[in-house]
Length: 205
Image 1 (cartoon, rainbow, N blue to C red):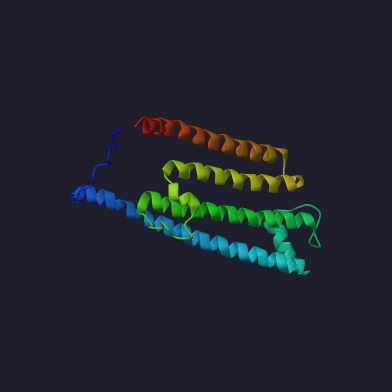
Image 2 (spheres, helix red, strand yellow):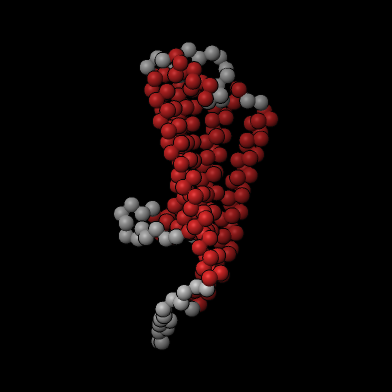
């Protein structure tokens, strides 16, 4: 059987000035990713503050308790002591922050690797597993999945605190969550359809 050897790659010729300028314009995205890193730092600070208020409220601090009640939007019976519902809503809010932070990491790392420049993480022990095969299509599917997770947390928080929301708000959030779910399924199905011919061509070769 004849083996086809991959074509040898010769020396890369320098780009002409205009293509070089267009290609270098990808670095204009760098401030965007640096801005997302700053947003990540704000989320970390917010997480630590809310966690600190939760600890203080568990110790009986009324000011911290009232801050938590206001931050989660709880407007039912006046709360004078930390209870299971308040703890659950605060913990869900913390999980929400973590999931949004994970979404930011995927956008920052995956977006920079895909659209700006290689990071050279091959062989690094802390290289994310998903980064080794990330591309624009994979990144879109992962982002859509992360958004569904965030929407699920918001919906769960709403249902736990359902007495403080109108039926219109509950129905609207449910419809929005279902829309996110259907959108993610459509993105994944479209990506599968687009990748199938390429996979079939590879097998034929």
